Length: 113
Image (cartoon, rainbow, N blue to C red):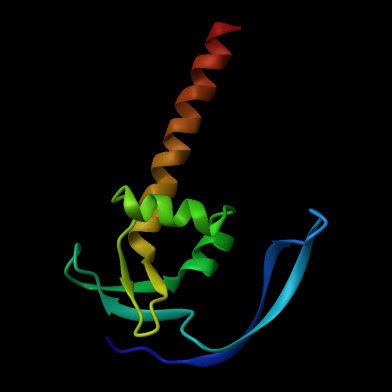
C-alpha cells in the first residue's frame, strides 16, 4: 500500500458532552486522509479515504460507515495503525443506491397523495 501522510486541519461535526452539535477543527498528525490503493474487490487503483472523512462526506456517523463495511456495502483496507480506509468508488455506489431508494419512495408518496 502506498500512501502519503500529511498534517491536515479539517472540520468534523462533533457532539459535545452536553449533547450540542458544534464544528470542531482537529489537527490530524500524520493521518492518512486519502490514498490511491488497489481495491481488492475492483482490482484497480481507487481513492481510499479515512473512515471519519467518509462519514463527514456522507453526512453520517462513523458507526454507520462501519455498519456498511460489515454488511459488505463498502470496501476497505486497514492502515498499519488499524484505521479503516474506505473505497471511494464503493462509497459513491452506496450513496447512489440510497438516492435511488429515496427517489423511489418519494415517487410512491407522491402517487399515494
